[in-house]
Length: 266
Image (cartoon, rainbow, N blue to C red; front, side, top):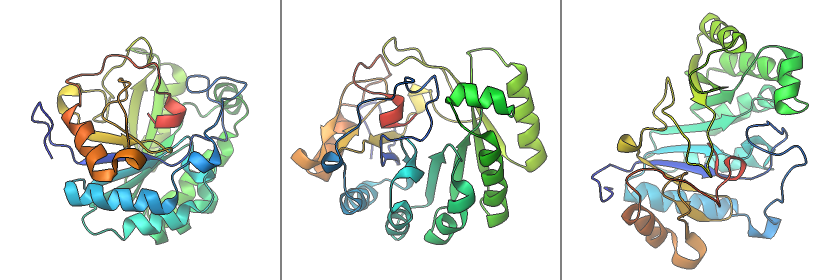
């Protein structure tokens, strides 16, 4: 599939929930947010059928995101359904890692191929501060279980202040190198102001190479995180929503007043 600027669109990011068990200060306010009503969430059957249509149209790379995807009840069964779709060459998940010690083996057996795990610091107190209550020991334990399970590569997503690498980041980098993990540096972004930068160690943030579409947990196909455009698969059907998103995909991101990182994924 080609967009109006001749970019090949082959990557689909699926937000399966807007819920999260953490409250990271760069993603969500301390008091939490108004969540999508349960009845408005896409069912696993809707997500699977949409993905099947997207793959038939040219998508071959799929990533499950959130919120935190591992808080969605039955998530392993969704992974199994998506993994069974012929034509997907790369199936991955972004997670904060808190539940990986429990889910690594079931995810692997269901067909998940890769993991990206958020980790901004190794210091327990600093981690609790950033996440407003999280336990970094659970993340580190989950990463080791994922490694032992066989996931490779495992990528570490580390949020940094743009252009700055503080001691926390350097320690995470050393930890990643010691364990054979790949690290990606993601600068803090602002959707409403349209502030974003290229991801160091990854492909995100480079508009000229953007190959992705996003599906929100309530059924909107979004062509760009930094745009308010969205097309309902329930109103238009999967194929038409995808076609409209690609047809209207902007040349570059500008700003968004409707998207949120916790609801659309980073």
